[in-house]
Image (cartoon, rainbow, N blue to C red; front, side, top):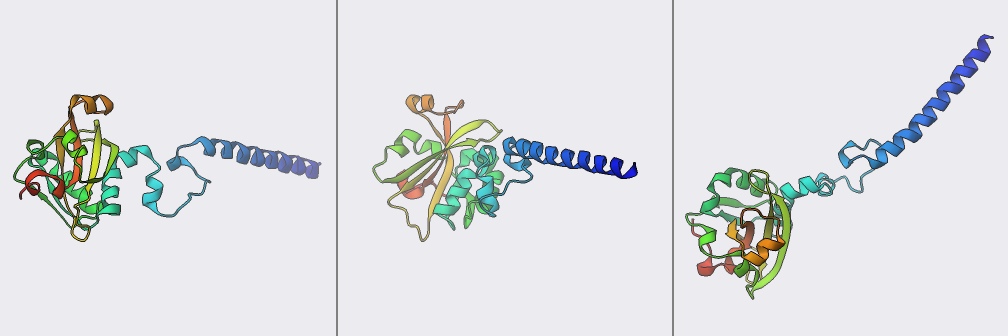
Length: 194
């Protein structure tokens, strides 16, 4: 009698384990990346894994682009972004791998607009990102590289510039501004001054 009860209990336990494994695999398959327990990632690089998450990419994508394309850059932050300087400095030094980050004495929005930057004939590339802006509102970020850039000693300027009506209609901005990172050689008079 005791042997039959044990066999029945082992059978029930085996069925429960198999059902749990099948059910768990199905739940794990539809879970967000950070909640998956048994799936393997395509890489062990934490940055590569994190870039798959849209929210993380919105926060750090622009900095990662700087680190990939122009590490060791000297970066000037526009004076009109002084309130966000500490955060921008942290992200640009840490994730963007910049050499220095300083606050400029003048404002980028007084020198140029996004339309002027995008239509510059010396542009090598313009990348657009949807980012979590200051105050966590969604805003468009642009990374504008110039053919005039010195990749051995890159100099970048970052800050907000005004949008024209057409660009504002195609972007997520509710402020009429876009955040740009631009090679200083693309700016009038060589860019901003410290």
